[in-house]
Length: 256
Image (cartoon, rainbow, N blue to C red; front, side, top):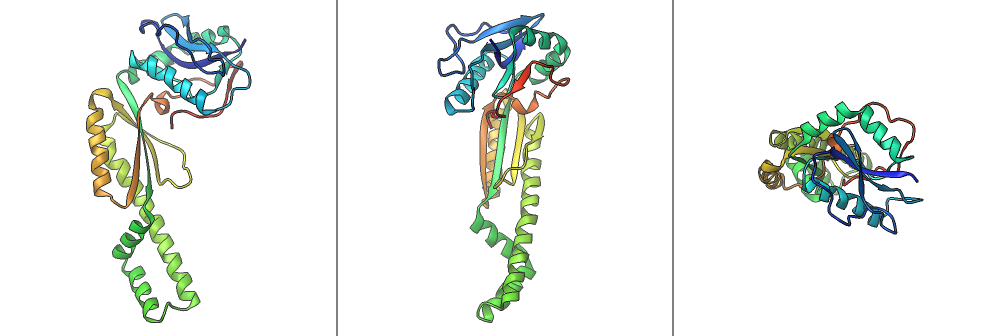
């Protein structure tokens, strides 16, 4: 039977809670595989696994339970090996990489920050900050709305100003929060979000980071700011050497 992998931790990590279960419609018992001073947290892999809500939550819950007792390198949802032996082989081959990552991520968690513009608020801001846009809008108003070409030009100017504001705000948000984190990982662009950034934060300074997020929210009322965390540090595990044969990945559906 194939093996589902939740994460990797040190052999010295406290034992798993008794009766812990993971993914699968009939939830599979969670167990560990050992190779030297490393262990992989695994279960048997169910057939036809898909990123359904129940299994996504089960994956995250296993990592949350393990992570509460010490550092764990979280795998994203859907990492499946052909067998237990394939997992222990990878642990052995990448041992130094995993040990380095465990040392680096010990005592740290991830916060993912997403932001988008509040449409009406940013339009008011663009109008207030851009004299050319303001002048053309006023000229169009005085002429009863302006001609077709003037309306098109105004729309293009507003769109360009909003786009520039997006880039400016994205840089400001990241710049204001970076000093409160140990590392930063910029996520993929996604429709509707002008910021999608993950921050690696020491557990004992998490309150300072959240306070900084609240300060950004107050100082940028034209932004809708969403903070998700604390999370296992998905964005900071970093891949080691190329995946060996025998590993497959389901949908890339981590905590974000």
